[in-house]
Structure formats: structure tokens, C-alpha cells
Amino acid sequence: MEWKKVAEIVDAIFPGETVLVKYSTSYIPEFLLRFFVEHTSERNISLVIDDDFDALYKILTHAECIGLTIDLNRDNVYVLKTGGKFKVGNVVANVPFNTDSRVYLANYAAASSKVFQEIPSTSINLVLGLEDLFLSMESPLDVYQMVLRVQKFLGNEKRKAFYIVNEEVMESLPVKILGELERIATTVIRLIPYHTGARVQVLKSINPHLMGVEAGIDIRGWD
Image 1 (tube, one colour):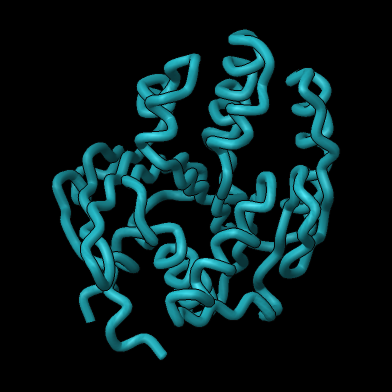
Image 2: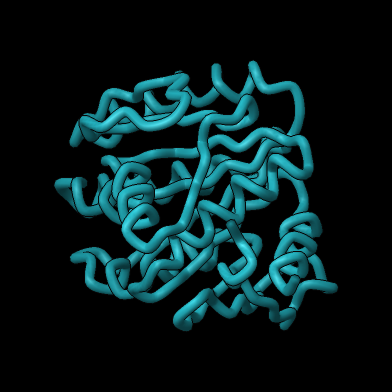
């Protein structure tokens, strides 16, 4: 199946990388979550999901509506939750949200470092709801403090981080930071939706073998 080529792309990303995954409004987050759950299970590696402001709940609800099964009840899947009210999956840490980015970042650093220390090998860190986190910030300074949060994780070989962002929402933010995130990211991927999946395009990578690579995620053939 063509999605196995996407698995090869993920495998070729180095530990410590920050990957920005851009998509337009569609069911791409649902397809991606299913893919990463299956992929990490097959590779026997941990999946740590940053669930910001109930993004995970919304994705699972949408998936159910379109008949896409996503099983988070696996020993290798962990959830690091910020804000919101719906507890979904194996929540191993709740990060208190504060509109003062300095307070929030201190809370996040304490919670996330403990989680990653307890996971024995390199994990995949899937970050969902980053747009809502930026929308909750009260000033441009707080927004850029959040960008620094992303940058500080560069080189942390305990994880491969994938930040899933809606391109239209990011471009509509009062503070335009999409370009800054693209600069910070070691790999940038764009997903282009179609009715049963998405085309995957690698736009930027520190791995020369990935530059310009294209593949696809298609839900046909998934149970």
C-alpha cells in the first residue's frame, strides 16, 4: 500500500528533529492520527500525543463520524494534555494552562520532561491543537515565547516531533508565525487532501534523500 512509503519517510527522519506538517481544512488530522497509531504499534515504539484544548477529542469524534476506527487503547500510546475538559486516551500528565506564556511553559517543561524520561527509547511526539494554543495567547510576546518552546526541543533525541497545523488557521492568526515555524523546523511536509486520503510532499529536510519525496495516505484498505 502507498502509505507504507509514508512510513519510510517517518523512519528516515532523525531523532531530535522538529517536523512541521501543514494541511488545509479536511480530515487529514484524522488520517494522520490513525497512521501514527498504526505505525508506532508496528515499529514497537512509543507515541506521545500532545492534546492541546481537546484537539484529540475532536479528531476522534470526526473519525467516528466518517467511519474511521482509531484505537488509542494500546500500551505504547501516551497523552500529554493541556487545557480542555475531555480526557481521552492514556493521559499521563495534565499541564495547567496559563495565559502568561512564562508560567505555562514552565508547567509544560516540568510535565513533559518527566514523561519523556520515563519512556526508554526515542518516541514519536504528535502535537495536536497547536493553533488553539497560539490563539489563547494574549500578546505577541507570549506567542513568540511559544515559538521558542518549539525551538528548544530541537536536538532532543528522546523524540521525533510532528507538529500538525492547519495552514489557513495559522495564516489567519493576529501574529504571523507560520514562516517562523517553517524556519525552525528541520523538516517541512505539506499534505494535500483528496476524498479518501492525502498526498504527502516533503518541502524541506535535513536528510537529502527526503527532499522532494512524495507519497500518499489513503484510508482504502484500512479496517
